[in-house]
Image (cartoon, rainbow, N blue to C red; front, side):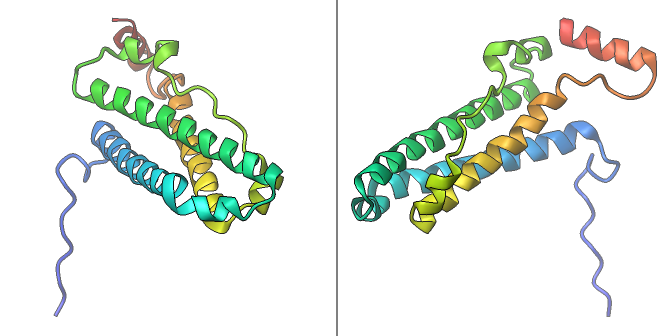
Length: 162
């Protein structure tokens, strides 16, 4: 007996870009919030014992990297909230392109230091950098002119302007 596959949700079966984008933003938001919660729990409590066992210079580096994780995640969450407001019609497309609402750059990961840190700290640092990198690709894609007819490109530019 064959079990029929669940049909794709409306809008996703046809590859509706608006629905796909909403799903992507929603899943990234959940991922960012879970990662933020894990990082907070680790760096506020669980990681204290591991940090105490590090040499003094690595302890400072551990603290700096934990701040970088927080910075990356807060930038990602703010960008995702902007995208959700855009999807909900609470924000005009041109406002989402304002530099103050863009993702911006992330603090660089000190890779040699990360290799010296406890595995859980290193995993959180790498995960936050990877999430920021993936969201940065989406942010940069906002600048690309949509493929297709010149009329669609003009329509997209007008939508962003107004």
